Length: 85
Image 1 (cartoon, rainbow, N blue to C red):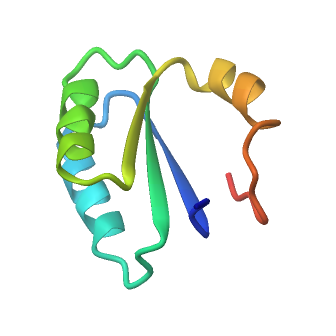
Image 2: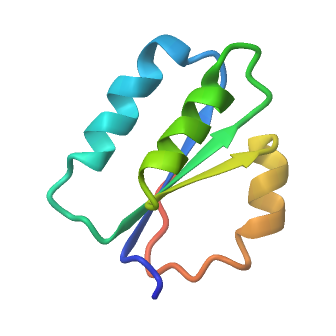
């Protein structure tokens, strides 16, 4: 089943803010969501933290790829009713 809302969170140098961001998204009243955390080659622990969230909650997906390349490759495959960037 395709979730109603997909939230794409690019990550680069945001380690101090990442937990608060993801926890806030996971606490939303709408549960039919997917959270796509995109590790944009961040030099900090963003990718590791994201992987920990993906293990804990199946709504969280992690992609380790530059965001520009990701958008170019994936946007045609996403089956979305609405896109906000």
